[in-house]
Length: 486
Ligand code: AMP
Ligand code: ZN
Image (cartoon, rainbow, N blue to C red; front, side, top):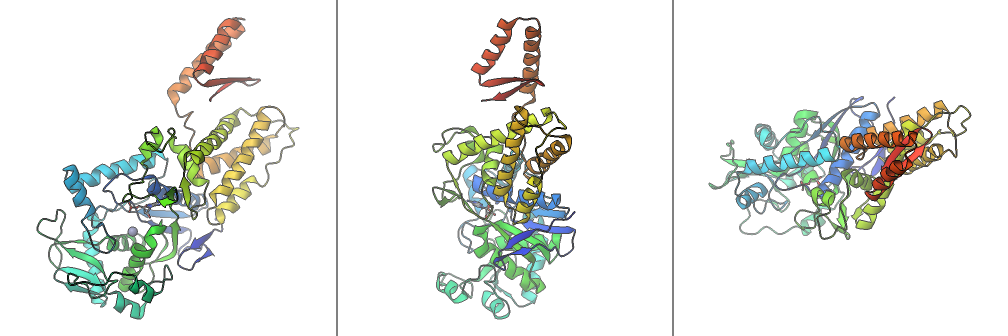
């Protein structure tokens, strides 16, 4: 069954019913990382939000082609064609080739995504692998009259475009105000209009990464890569385009302009933007230097952290906020998430041990429907978590014998956990995935059982207390002995 999903479309500034152009197929493009340094936790929030959306669309019966690019060229320090190339600068700093920088941080990004148990996208194209497509697109934009050349650099003509189309359609800003708030052109500037931006930039002799083009040696601007790659893999019109909110005002605004100037229609039907992860209210960003690296968070090796938190705790923390709300990073919030996540996973681990009883009166009705309704309502993950906590409460009451559950209801509970904890949220039990520890504890529990059967209570107590001293709690019940970490 295909779910009816409502999502917030930045383009229309309202929630809309999601109607893909070619259901059940869905094309989704998300701006990927600029791989000149480690991804920080803010970047991860955006990618994990889209992982949740990708997973839920698939769960809902759609066949999704998810394209998330790697920006490995063309991203200058300023969004308006100023400053150094981010890769070249880093390459000099680390004394590496630019493509070594790209390789190093692409691998790092993939490692982090794997730790968070995020699914890989269907296609992960790179800007450097699509220079030809970008040049072709620039040629079409020029042929359509919306770009001009100044000495080997090609600029997009915002004024000309604005006469036919709405440049500020995505953010609904006033063009006059935007012009007033943009730096005036100086004598050094080649562009004709303040809002014009580069599609292709002429290389200097010392530029490390440069390619031949009809306009001489150069490299592509940052915005053109996403327009070229989304069109190549999803077509000139596709369903969802996503990224962080900070990209809407410039990068996505320019993407729309380029695509429209090329194909004469809007590229994406729905634009989705994730809100920012903040630290003490300030956006986490590479340039501000307030970025936590995932590794620092997992180990706790950071001056602002009291201790380390596991990847699943961090992911759970992120999903406790809706993707369109800001989320502020704090030790207290993470500690609370850690407790909540442990409570949930502890209940999940008890689920296979629950025994059905036909006298059971517990009714699970509604829990899964509530989760589906919440996700259908613009991917409202915090509401799903509240429902999962209700499931946790039920599991615990059955486990400790205060309530009984029949086989049909128990099945519903198992489906709910399987669908939402694992399939849609992509969480995993970090404790039980530690197989060595599991195996050792299974052995110790078996030895203790044997000691008890031989009435050797001194040994069985010694085992229980010994484990307790290292933070492992044994719990005996009719069904056997289970363990949990304090
Ligand atoms: P970048 O590598 O800078 O191109 O960013 C990759 C993605 O992370 C983009 O979609 C950004 O919008 C997003 N992003 C950057 N900073 C944050 C943040 N503090 N919170 C959430 N997303 C962010
Ligand atoms: Zn992009």
